[in-house]
Length: 261
Image (cartoon, rainbow, N blue to C red; front, side):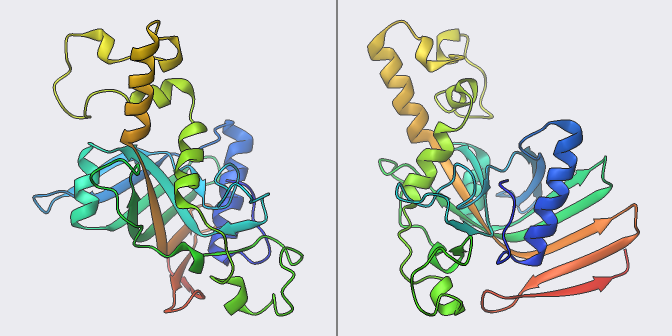
């Protein structure tokens, strides 16, 4: 998370604010969240994930020419191309994520639709179904030179140079080496092989150059970035006994409703 700006929806401001308060206590940079999907038998499947942040924020710049002037409310997570959740999301892209922040007493639920971005060499690669140009906006008022920059039609989706493959690459490069190595391993959830060489802890430390390059390429090919187009947010403050639900309207605006906890 990389703070918020005045143009961000209220739920994102609240979300980022609570996460930053929790981080001041725990020192944890990435917030662990439970991701719920529907498995191929129609049953719920839940696992912990660490979101990489919102598109445009931090290292998730929207293109190589982006100097930090863009932001969005599209949350990202990552996975191995051969993990079960990939097929689950291809089959049903409705998801929920939930986090509990124990020190601040905040519970956050995010609902939305997942879009998967595979490596360009992957047989599963296709154009991203989500048009993120409709989900990004300038971080501050001085970003655009357009005369009508305050007009939402200009803020959302006009002359935005957005490179989704660049975003995926930056997400991969900003993992620790031990995390990058995981993506070179055999498919998750399968029986573990006896050959320990299949599980390098750091690709750059593989002695044989050809082997190192092979594992590096495998890791990059197996790295899938998932974009969560959030459409509903439910935030409960257990210490204050308050609860607010945010719902995306048909356009890029949001409604907010205070409800009983």
